[in-house]
Amino acid sequence: MRRAAIIVLDGVGVGPAHDAADYGDGGSNTLGNVARAVGGLSVPRLETLGLGRCAELAGVAPVAAPTAAHGVCEPASPGKDSTTGHWEICGLLLEAPFPTYPRGFPSELVDDFARQTGRAVLGNKPASGTAVLDEYGAEHRRTGSWIVYTSADSVFQIAAHEETVPLAELYAACLTARELLRGQHGVSRVIARPFVGEPGAWKRTAGRRDFSLPPPGPTLLDRLAERQVPRVGVGKVDDLFAGRGITSIHTETNAEAYALIEGALAAMHRGLLLANVIEFDQSWGHRNDVEGFRRGLVELDRSVPRLLNGVREDDLVIFTADHGNDPTTPSTDHSREIVPLLVFGPKVRPADLGRRRTFADIGQTVAEFLGVPALGAGTSFLPEVWLD
Image (cartoon, rainbow, N blue to C red; front, side):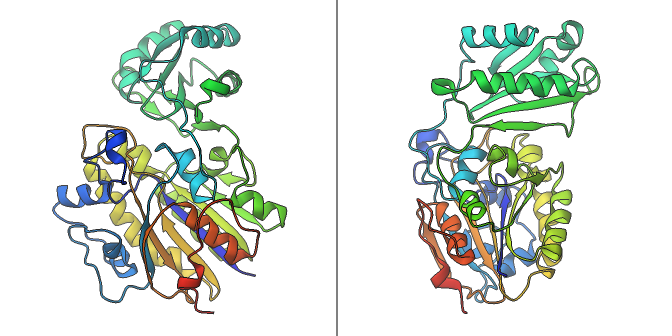
């Protein structure tokens, strides 16, 4: 009857990874830079858990007696996107990074996409999701052409106004793109980006959908499914695993995610809760919104008592992240960072877990905790923290 929860705070890195400079992210430190930029964070509940023991953060003390085991995890897979990060958390490492397109996608690929979907293409370049609407939104409304863009991440993003292109057609176009984007052009995700509004007041909607490649090997979710251990998803996690091994309720805001996490911990009898908390990345990191990021951290801190209120005696709850997204740097893209590791439960010894070599230690720990076969990567830290 054991239960585990992995709560992924999307984009909440805590400092540069050992190879951050290779990714152009040498100065990135999402939480550290946000804390400095706002004159110190006030997150007393996260401080009590041990967040200040994970990294040096202005305003967050490294308390002497934290209530959670604590440490950080290095990324071992190449890349810095959500799919790579979540797969690694669940025990699957990549040998090579997903392809990226800093000069846009090959013309023959875009031409095939346009021919198969019956609409022309605007953009085809790296761009911010809001800036690209300002640039091409009006022309899209006039012509009905797709707005296609990418970023520093391995993504093929398709934007369309909901009054110009029905959502069903946008999703169908994403499936067409997903079939085209395989092999050497196998990007991590094709993303539907519907929006509404008028020039100068465009607004992206909650109709976003991610179409990921299926994981190329077994993950924690597969191991649990094989043993018929229940899996509950919150946020976009089903999309990140191409729907394999988990279903999920999507959320537009962190508050929605917290409410679903709270409800799941009240209702689940056993198994794994895997949650993605999206706004640190989507709403604030990608938009360089430092103040929004700070408010989000305060909201998270205030939600901690409710999130942990439903924790039972034999539960294991892990807070972590999938990459960084530093809103204080000029970049609006993900950053190659270490991620926090906070492990809570009534039977958890608040040990110092140090600097782990891979995110996969999390999945390996949960696999051991829930009694399923070991994963292909990672070292379980369960013996270091579990008191039973």
